[in-house]
Length: 126
Image 1 (cartoon, helix red, strand yellow):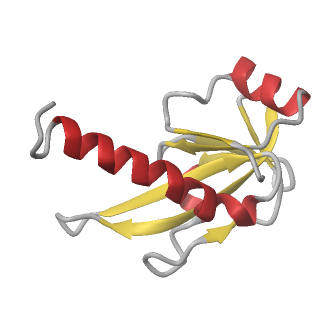
Image 2 (cartoon, rainbow, N blue to C red):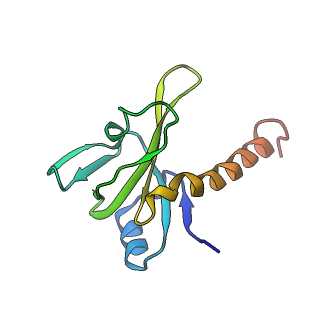
Image 3 (cartoon, one colour):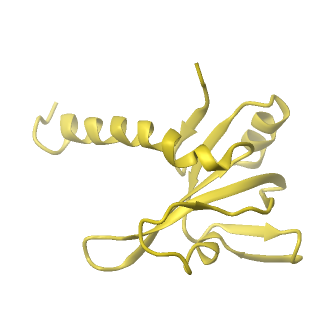
């Protein structure tokens, strides 16, 4: 069984990423569009979303160079989305290994999120 930690945007702290990397735990963590990342190969800091603006909407890609987030080396995967208001949005994930698997892994978490939303605020009101 392929196992990994898949979490949302609240879990991107430096100590957390350092622990996951040190323990060689596979993870896929969503980050905010405006999250700052350091590109070692260009020696500059940019917003994560800038790496995905040139792609078509819903085209899921992974950035093939290692980046630094909160002092930790990792990879980014993501896609550009068009939200209901026609505004551009992004789904961006951080991982230490297998960034090409990020979409597949995150899909499972998203199904749970949508189920939870339906059970609590979108109809069932449990």
